[in-house]
Amino acid sequence: MRRVPHWSFVVGSLFLVSLPCLSQSDSVHTALDTTITAPLPSSDSLRLAATTQLALSDTLHYRPAKKPWVAVGLSAAVPGLGQIYNENYWKTPIIIGLGGYWISEWIKLNNNYKDFRDQYTGSIAPMTPNGNDTYRNLRDFYRDERDKFAWYLGALYFLNLVDAYVGASLFDFDVGSDLGLDGRMARKATATIRLRL
Image (cartoon, rainbow, N blue to C red; front, side, top):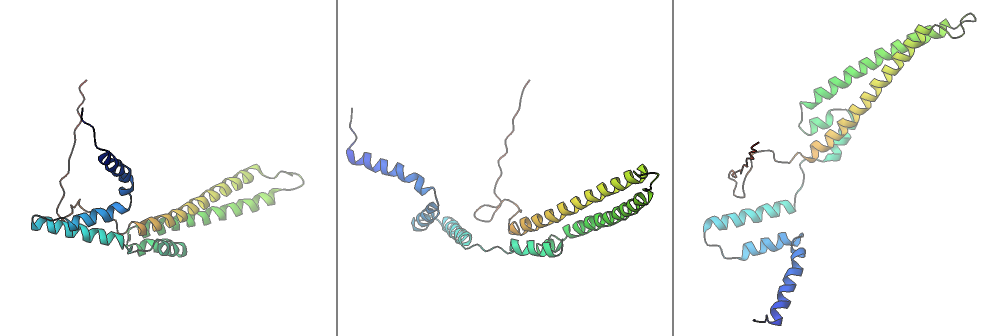
């Protein structure tokens, strides 16, 4: 049986220990350096390496096109304005329309609540100390419905802010076709599972 020299064992151990360190952020620089300094056999490989270097340098100095907190501030001031800032124009009429409908319902329910509250208060007399039960039930019903629409408005306002933040954060996210490193369409692999029963 052949014995492994001591120095190769030490070099192999150092290599295995350094693998986790290479997998962190330094691996991008190391891979970039090795790609650029390695001899390239063809012009296609050279173009691929230059594209890779450009893509990596762009990601290191990334600046988003839209600022999330500006979008949140605009939506906080006027609901739907952050969506206009994010160029999601179709969301603004939904937010304003739904909010306007719920505000009108809240106002109508609040007016009905006040009417039946006043009628119930007027029905309290020495002969009927508990007042009219119908007025009291209607007063409570309209109060509960009014409060429900207030919760709807609060949830819509909060979701408006969250949507503005997420829309600005994902503004630069590419949702187009899958592109390879050279800018051409990448091939997609599909898998099929068949079960026979």
